[in-house]
Length: 584
Image 1: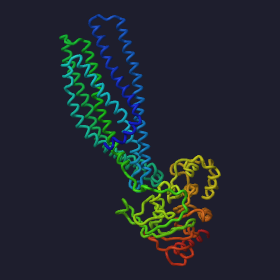
Image 2 (image 1 turned 180 degrees about the horizontal axis):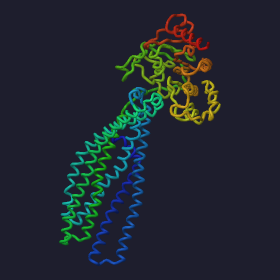
Image 3 (image 1 turned 60 degrees about the horizontal axis):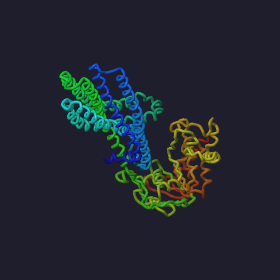
Image 4 (image 1 turned 135 degrees about the vertical axis):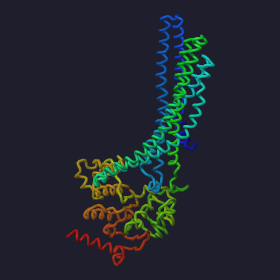
């Protein structure tokens, strides 16, 4: 029932269209019931040789008129009911995407992109079918089926009762098959998610696959998952493939009864030849409701399985959310304080690996903090805690003397510019990637931020400059170019705090020095935190910390730290030697 509640708002919003659509559908069903009556009059007249040419023409006009009306009302119900199912599809997809965006980073650490793609495409398509054609089939099964039986009873009660003998068998078989259908559909949808993820991953990594000549292995992996998908579908086909022929068998049993008993009653003149033909016509109309009963079961089970899967995503609550009385700040000054901060990766900070331990740190407004340390020491994790991408496991982080958990998440993140270690580019233009497709960003602003990122001269060499298409994940660009576009994107954001994760790791020495000069020019304007493996990127910082195994092992200025014989000093001298060797 919780899953069904997902689509109720969309039905309520479109209730008038649904009402008009159902009314039009009922009119179509009723109009179809008059055609066998007209056929009865015609056949009785012909067998009695008492029909005139004018009557035949009139009956033909009746049927043509009914056909036109059926066409008009069928267009109306298709427009209203199937249109509503499309709106349900749109609404659910938008709701799913909006909800997924609210989920915490830990959710995406444990969820495959292929699963989310399957939810947003295949699952929602099945729900659309269930709410659209499923509603139509259910209405026909009830209205057209009941009305056809009513007309058949009017012709001959005894014959109708014999014809309805297979009906209880339909009910029993529907109950039996529906349970197995639901289970099979769940498994098919789960396997479809696996297939989507495998293919998406192979397409995204096609260049690596070709470079290492792993085409056969990649094809074999896709083939293996495809076989699993086919296997699950064949299991479903066994159920569905048995169900529909069973419906046809019951229908044909009814037809056999009509031919034998109805034929005898026609011979004995208990019913007229016209009644016999009309009865068979009504049985033909009853065939679709009987089939619709099976089809609607099929659609509903598909839709129900997909609704359950969508509901599980929508029922997932973000680990990081606004407090009840969360505050907003118009502008951050940028004072950041870490107080006994611990962080453990894992559900709710439990059972995972400890990434940070006992972090105590103060960054004054307008100053620069440099963070260095060996790989895996917790540098990126520390950055991620400031905009609350992850929640601290212990202790607290304060910005401008306010616990960041007391601030609205959107308000906090809007005032923090963040450049991640692995820059992500969308498959659009350079302009769209820097401005997040904001058409209000002036050309002069774009030029300024690209100059700050040491990117402007590089872009001038491109034929389309800012309007150059970068391809999927920036495939046409070098690593350094992608990194500088991500840096320009961060500079473009008017934020009081600037977080940079290894901003010059993929650029040459001269370009790196140009970026460092830009950062120096920002001292006093923004609070800047720089994570870097290259000491040259942080040596000008007001304070520098070294992290190792999640703990601060040394802290001070560049001059103070190189006077020691610890990690920072050793890394500095080693990199100085490498630069001298490269220069010579």
